[in-house]
Figure 1 (cartoon, rainbow, N blue to C red):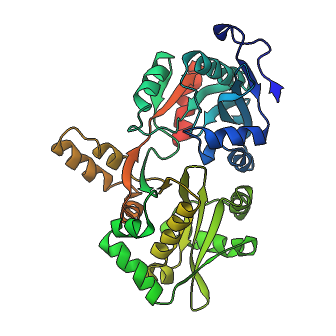
Figure 2: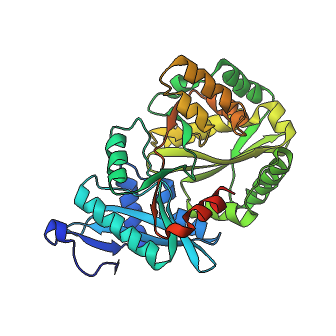
Figure 3: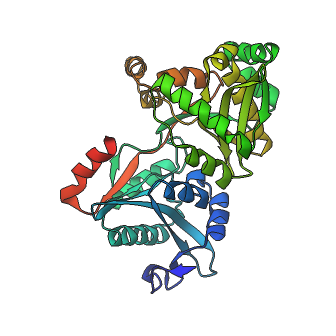
Length: 363
């Protein structure tokens, strides 16, 4: 561990210390924290480092030397300036003095990196009992709410039920497609490192067909390797040919559906439905409480808590123009609950450049 703050916090009679923990120590803390996320793990920082980000871990220890709060902070620099960002974090203690010290530590690191702003994206859904207090506290610290970088709205499938119950909660069409894929001869197998080339070929074909950007092959290879054994490559084969593939992940609480693709033959055969069912079962077997289907139109997240029917209908209509609406139709058939995360919170550090930096991020 390396010290970030030489003196102890004055707010807790010298009991708190601000440190930079080692990777293994940090990952143990993330695993036991109620909001711990894959995106706060050491491996996620390593993955993003391959794309030009730098990673700093900032944490608070108590009088016994135990971690009680912290964040994995990503920094990206250009033209002598940078942005600082905590994806699905920080992991707060819920104790004001501790959390103020953590926020001060993050701001200090960000300022040293000449960050235009510091962005926090807590891993709290609006329905979480701690959400209102966290939102109010962050506003009282002078942070401003902004749109998130990670998906703000998603679908969570409850995995704390028998498999048969989870399957029964899927739509009739999805259950039929899962059975149709099995009857049609689609075989699902677990891939290994030798199959990553086939996975990338499918991702490249899918990106070209659907006109969306993908990462390079090295990125997917690193993602699979960094999170073993809690990453899984699932391949669907038909007549001996790989026709669809999913790369899914699991942290201590959730399975995460992050990367997938399919050839036309796989789409027609229902291979994606069968793969996703296997992914759900895998995450459940690991003990995950829910499966995060990772991103739907945010208008649908807002619609789920709309104050009246007219607003609900208007937001559902707005969602039809969102590029994610087609993906949503696939995801909603697995019977998940719509959730919406808290917004991002920005600490503006170089005010004259802030709006310009936001526009560059949006682009």
